[in-house]
Image (cartoon, rainbow, N blue to C red; front, side, top):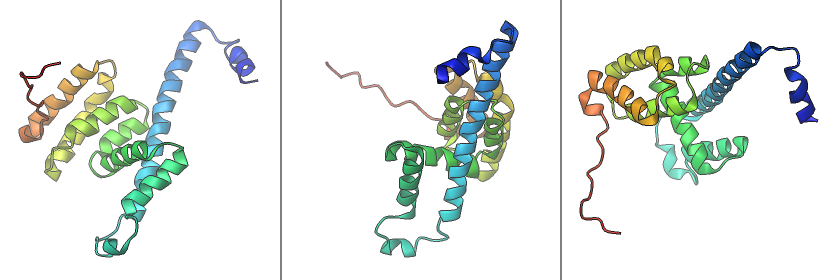
Length: 178
């Protein structure tokens, strides 16, 4: 049944219309993913304790409880749910402008995840706000970049605002043998 719907979906559309449908579907997919993370971030904001005094008496802490809920809601493993929660909190608390660009569908999950990962060492809240604005402004143009080029571009902005927040690759062990 589903196949028949897709087969006739583009019967009245020319090639340019099909290409436009591809672009619209990609933006919609990105925006839906952003809404999912926004909902996870909202759950986090509602459940985050004001302090951790009561946490000592919990059998399972609030964070792990949220991970379990997200895992069940999405039908994914707790490890994947923990990652989604990490991205959701970062977008909500540190990178709201990047979250806005993601919600518009202008960047995808891959790019958003790279931004979260490459900027998490920047701790100064004033610098994070500036970095968030700069990356949000430029990120839509980075969709075509390979992963190394994308990391390079993000790191360039991190270096510009907070050189101490730049990720440094680990040292290679020259004495490794296989």
